[in-house]
Length: 406
Ligand code: JHZ
Ligand code: SAH
Ligand code: ZN
Image 1 (cartoon, rainbow, N blue to C red):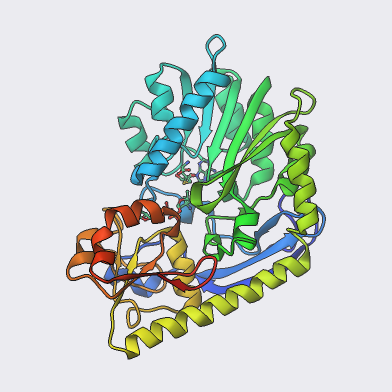
Image 2: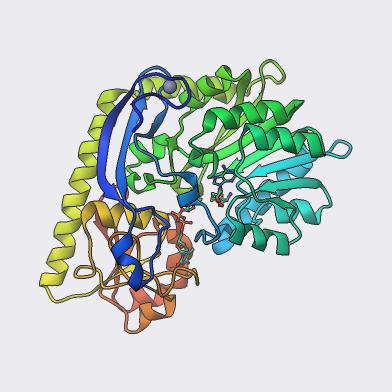
């Protein structure tokens, strides 16, 4: 259990306890339900640097391994986003002679495949061997290791320094962040950039996306906490852009202190977070009370639907579905199954709640009366695909930012 900040050593004050939970990507086969791993899912904020983080953590070997479920290329919007990212980096940061980019957590190569196709020197660092193999099959060079200060030194010794270090939805996963930041310092060229895009504390707290809280997300960054972290390691936050991925994230750009002129937007965002009191204890505690209300309303609604003799099916089995179903104790009595397009999730049970996961074809066979949208961040893509559901009179249930039926 952590009561000290993983970045600055300050005191971490707990503000939300979501109970005992499994790992969010710990999908199970029916015979595995009796030996399920759980831990206490609770979050706190550092009184000194404002960094919001998990209190207890799950070891990285339990989370990332040869059977990691999440394949980043699984949705069209993600493929487009990361191809766009790669093209932008190729145009802006990787134009010099023989540039070198390192991606921490390249997963199935969703971003680096475009870099590899452009013939630019690159290396993905990806400990989950199954997704690393998919990346390799797409022409991406991958080191199957956990990135830390030691790996960074080894990469530099073999390949030289890196002009760009990139990470998406990965930096917030790495509990040994102090070692990661030292690694960035070792590996980056003097004018290089460390760019990472991660779920934003503002989206989670103000946008009420409490289901983003789970074992893999050890940190919940804000502009304030990232600026402070950069400074501790001789770096500087030089840009912060809001992007729409996963319901609202920020892409942070760090450079060596003094090497680049910070974009004017950084100071504005810092002032804005202060004015909104984003990481103040009362804001975080109010968020905690909201989460309890959402739980009570959602459970009441699902019970009422069942009492009326109607059916609800879950749509999408994202990591987020684990947090909601387990915190709200939604079992197969309320939601008999969930549909998801990921083949390696189908035929398995959601962790903890043990809702069965079936292929999307099961959704229309026959359509339920209601669909509980677990993959709410993909609403547009899913609704476009499932127009027939609404035409048949079906209604979507959401719970972020609050419980809503439409
Ligand atoms: P999605 C994952 O979060 C896990 P998750 C991880 N911890 C993280 O940080 C971020 O990604 C990067 C399915 N689906 O993207 C596919 C359909 O069934 O919200 C996925 O299983 N039909 C690494 O798990 C799930 O929904 C569809 O049409 O919260 C979405 O998962 C579409 C579009 C998706 O990530
Ligand atoms: N970048 C992709 C994938 C994010 S999933 C996207 O944004 O969709 C997070 C990935 O980080 C997983 O593939 C996981 O195996 C990897 N990861 C976890 N710890 C890591 C570490 N210490 N070093 C490098 N990668 C890590
Ligand atoms: Zn701190």
